[in-house]
Image 1 (cartoon, rainbow over the protein chains, first blue to last red):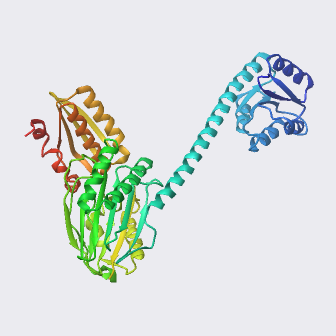
Image 2: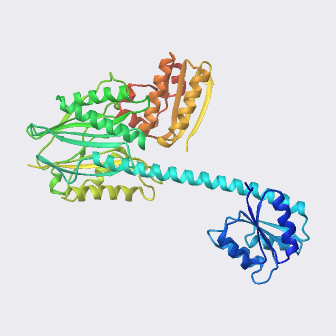
Length: 388
Length: 112
């Protein structure tokens, strides 16, 4: 097996023969051509690894030939050594400027040529290895991107379908994962007694791990809701599930709520999460006075025995509620300040009647407030209207 | 950009953190805390948060994990010098009741 293919291009037959002799003896497969045009014809049949070409030749000279080879995406990676009868650094530099990879001066010395060829083939071997590794990395990245995109679609499928409707409520959301796939999740589960259970959670970190845990958080919430009880039972159950089934640094902040239109109240547990916002009469849109509902508590998953507290707030017909994850309000601006909950209250003081338009406006205004900085964390926003 | 410095004060290790503690830097901070606990095996680990402008849930998770890790080796973790923004986050997540938090580094080192 030959060590590689070398194309020798020179209008002087003796030079072609001498170079051919040494190259063959060193184990290379040798192709020959008497000028650039013939060399290009030869290259249509077999692509060489290395070209050694004279500079001055009839029909197509070495510099034109070099420019043609280096200008063609198919052949530009072929190692090109230009042979010039003119010595001196100026000629060498102009040759290299043509795109040649190396220069040899005439008169040729067989040993020098062979040393250059061996050195060139070491570089060629390295380039081939880099290309192979690049191709492998590209394939790997393509596969990862495809899988991430699939996972992101699956995650979108875990969110409630829009426009959201359940007895006595309408809702919408904006879900903006930071890395295509995120650790935020929310769920609204209508219950047989006409009430509904709601959960919004933010798993620490983002990306695939957080997304996997967020799916677990949703399943945990739904299974505890099925077992009955109220937000305190659900939060405690979810806390236990996350504490026992995730790694030490993995937690979730969550808001777990029970929306009860019969009692006109909303009872909830804040587990390290942003508290919900109530806009009294907000369903009608227009100028309102939003209020942040009180509440604080441990994140879910720190310790299975930590206590949580439940509280209740009015949940009247015509009220609008805004639930969100901290990514919406915790973007550090250029002046080092944050929108924060208070800023979101400000933005929520005048919203359109349509909940989807309201959600869109809130996200847009938060983005404008943070500009030129952008959301760095997952962002979820839910606007929920209490209807009759 | 996070700046982390560690030093020994008798049998205590002090880790001073400056900057934003979020998901991007938790790996760096985790390594420092783990190495400090593993190499110095301090009876008391003090984490000074005075220069922290912001901490997110990943950062809080890291501190909780640090406390668990120090607990396991029968040591103590004291936090000190929480700026207002960080204090607010700790309040919101009830972590003021989970950690031993001190106003100054001297208090944290004395444990009083």
